[in-house]
Image (tube, rainbow, N blue to C red):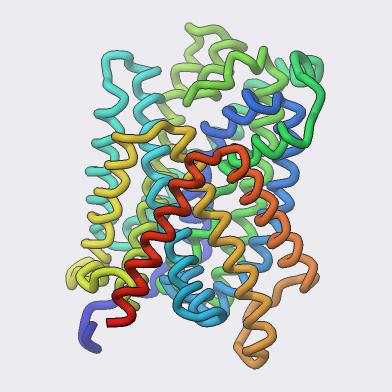
Length: 429
């Protein structure tokens, strides 16, 4: 890119960053996690969720140091490149792309399922495809406009989840939550980990918009820490109350567990259940929209550094958005939407995230040693324990996911090996 080429602009404040961060994740509170109940029951999945909550709290405190030190659209790619070199930079970028390109298809399918639940005449796949067209269009208009939209729908989603908990908590009984469970086993907990990770997956995407944040040394820590606090409360509250309000076995294999919980507790003709389903679309819209921001910035950053075709680093001169990155990532997501199942897409997305978490934490340790004078506006608390815990739990989660999903893992790592081979050939030209 030439020095006069259009660039991304710094316009995001703390509230907008919170909206993007929580928005990227909040769909995981609406659906996806309930598949973990089918594997481990409510008690085993609770253990998995607590493990994953510790992982994300320690990871975010550590990751914030990296993001504020290098506020670049490349995010994990930039961290790994600086610390470990181009090969590991590529590996981190690959994991991040899989994480963020495959997140939207799962959310889009849930969007369609929610709409179909409310209006059975509406085809699930049709709504999912329309979501791509509409929200890529919104993202093309500019990051400030996208962030304001994100903030509104995220705030509505958070309020709705609080209303949901308020409506359902009178029906909560601990005996419902503990009923029908087999003994908690290590294998059950490990196998359920990907669906617990879905509660928090994509919060790391804030790093991809760091280049568009005003005063990043102050705004990024505030945005991250407010976001992880919000998500911990919503995730644990929603899961515990839903499991104790009714027979949780009726919720384990559907993409709309919260409306179904309201239907089972308040009655299928309840106006609250119907209204929640309509408003529940806001949570899915927020995540779809914000993950679209995330994947486009990662594609843009990789292309800017020569890891992907350079035309993908083009920035629209009028709106200052990476238009080809938005469109190409949407095309890949549509392919995944048409070919994959929701649970398989979630597992592949989580595999990408775990690979990226591991490279990011290793990068933090390496940069502390090799670049001690690097400006660090935010310093990881309890160093080295927090990043060490995050790294260890990421490795455990990756190992568990690979062990229990060998076919999908083989596909993931074969794709990584193929991409590395192509990268090495191009690099040696």
